[in-house]
Length: 69
Image 1 (tube, one colour):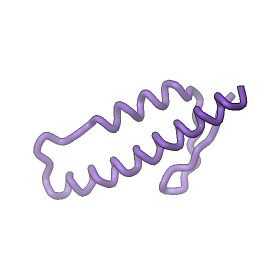
Image 2 (tube, one colour):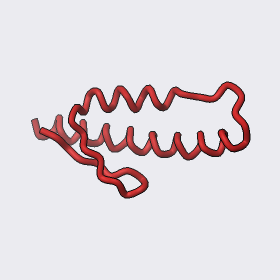
Image 3 (cartoon, helix red, strand yellow):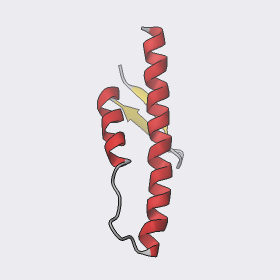
Image 4 (cartoon, helix red, strand yellow):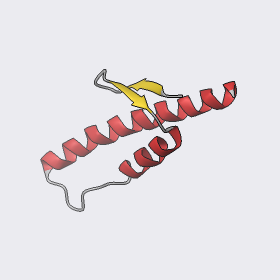
C-alpha cells in the first residue's frame, strides 16, 4: 500500500517503500560539505531543514502504520 506525505514546498510525495525511504533520508542527512562556501552553507541549512521534515513525516507514517497493523 502506497502512502503520501507533503514536503515543505507543498509537493505531494508518494511513498512506495517506507522502510527504504526512511533509510535514504537518513543517509541524505549525513551529507556535509568539507569546506562550504557561504552559498553552500546557506543551501545546506535549507536542505537539512527539508530532509529533517521529510524524515519526521516518514517516521510518523511508520508509527501510524504500526498502530493500525
